Image (cartoon, rainbow, N blue to C red; front, side, top):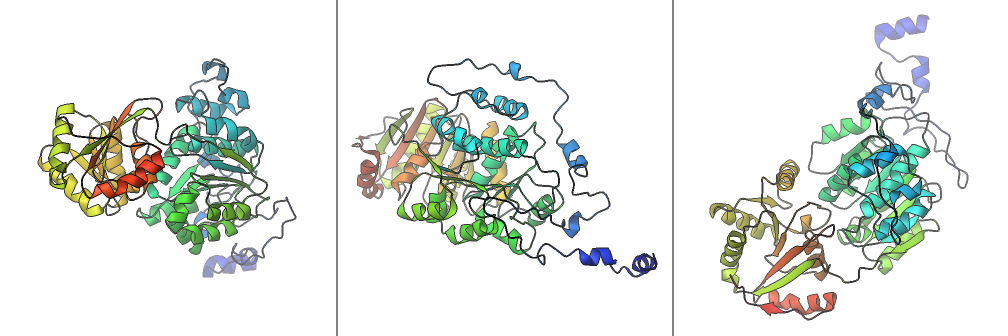
Length: 464
């Protein structure tokens, strides 16, 4: 009692608090093969408030904030007829709260990557998935993640310790995955947090330190920052998702991802879902290091570029590109289109010129700060911004419904980027139009593009 009184007067910690060392100083737990450590961890000082309790019961305030609405919902309300040759989410015995999110997200039948990967992923197997963007792989791994967290709950949770970690190479892709995750988990009570560079650091820091985090979606660089400042600990990760591994390799993120992977439980003690559009020799080496007896799922598109997209290649002189583009945009009365260019300065100048000519356009490139980029994307999604001028930062991970046209103001240096660009239209079975403005400078890219697409490209004069 005397020690408690002295502690109250001087502010010195009591014996009990002195004995409770930070997680950093605690000895590492030695896990037996295929057995997770039973060690529990002290919450962050930021979480050590009077009203914070790290137990499930103490997390009641957080759960109440995420409590599903009172409107009754039954699985019988979600009717999807059985069709031969098509897999349904109904057939996978998913929790009702997740099924409600699936219904509200507009899903009925599984795409090939979902149908082939989910049965094994739901059993806890590691998955090696090869699939192009736009095939539904995000919904595949998010469904597996949410199901695992709901069916294998923990009684005691702590701030800063996510149970599921999803790593993706770009800010836009992380934000998109986070949005999809919140939609699917809307009625589950799970907390989804995204951390990316270029956004308010302190706000993101509070999101991981002051609350229990179920699903953390992050870019490699910002996650490394949070690990270094001891704002995030990864040794309680039950399921690790690495999305677009080939892109992370191209962007030089693999050393960061290696460090992130080493901070999680070892393979075999966690479930790993590994997705990549291509399996190069380097990717194969990473697969061997990071996965345990993975189930391999490969979805090969019937054609490299979808048949839903009408591809046109217009021959124009370099100094005529802008006039041809403006004329086409006006005469076709296009309501939502993305215009791609190769460099930041080209996109900036192009966006300025379009606005000066009365065509409302927004800019999406690496030089635009993250908050403005998010606002620009939201305006594009809600229809108040008809044109988006972008570098390849928007080529992957941006899913906006109703994009009728994609323009290639320049042909990209990499043929694969061309496919990702035009994949922003013609989604979910809709028809789309792709128009490439090919000048003498772009002609050098045509042979490699023809080889990649496996077809001879027909060049034509613009008719407008």
